[in-house]
Length: 433
Ligand code: LLP
Image 1 (cartoon, rainbow, N blue to C red):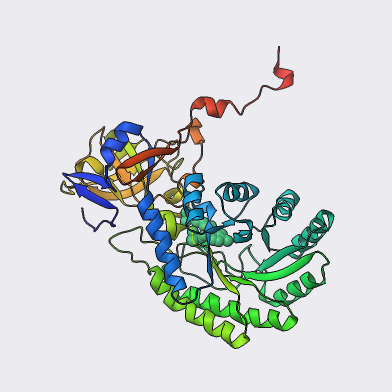
Image 2 (image 1 turned 180 degrees about the horizontal axis):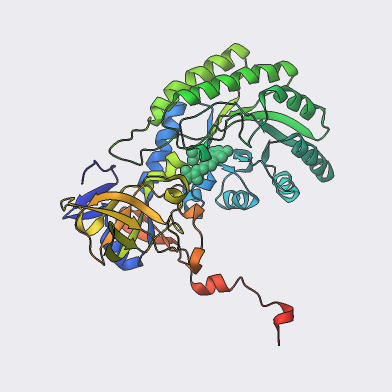
């Protein structure tokens, strides 16, 4: 191994372990490909983030970003720990409620909600983060029809550049998300004039996989400045939501990520000074996703074959159908040969998936021990935007997800079968005999 493993991963007797479990045994027992998540790591990631913020201010509410990993078991664990959720669809809203999260701890986000989405939010008394004037008008009508007052925030576009992949920077002036600076006050004024709307919050999210704290501090500064303008209008803010976005180190040799404590130390003084000056005491809402789940999970994938062409390819059974991040964002994920974890790294390989696309590369030009068919490769840090972005491309059923906790392990989502895929397809009436 050329890098230090995080606490929940270890090498024992030459094999890679997650928690107390030998990855090779897990692969044998449950088959490959396989997602394996460590429940203790999940819990400690959550508690650490929560405590780091609450050390500065007790009135913090964690809203887990459900899109990062929407497994119901994971959502339930976070619900038990006191979390609400940032939900981005009616589906995620249903999942959050089913997991036991309280409606008052949810925020329905999204730049393109349907009227049915808005109706559901109203019906379930879930606050809505509005992303346009048009949506404000629609929600006012829908709340009126339901005889309710809808509590809302607007998503603020803070127009700041962040050091991350352009596809996941969400608070740029040119981004599709949020209300522009020069329209924010008008938006809140319009909301106050709506009969069935009560503006109570502010929301922003500047992007994802951000490995510096300064952009978050900058966003917090903008948020409290806008909070002042809105408070002057007469809005009584009960929450300010500064989103998620704190990254994790994917390249364990070259990358370091700010800790939740460093994040809190940078952001909280700005937030606290701001609200103190305004004389308001809103709850602070945060929406971490990746930071809570990213490093908790490995994908175990089996080597089908090894081929020497212009370079050496290792063909495994997990591709961008299960982990889209390398193909979509050129993302880096560490790979470890789980059954040879203490062998010398002597050969350069490119690890490729089984999908019929040239871009289906999991790891490019990596030094690994000598690899043979049947070896088990662990892809690290696959807990965020792994399964949640998985597809059935090439008619490949999605694989199971397993949780480990102490000496126990169990399936938290079964694998799909080709029958599952076929079951959604219908014969057209004019093709019936
Ligand atoms: N809140 C909102 C409104 C968001 O849009 C997101 C992520 C989050 C919170 C959580 O961000 P996090 O703490 O996880 O960075 N698929 C990409 C990431 C897309 C993020 C989308 N929004 C990836 O694999 O890197």
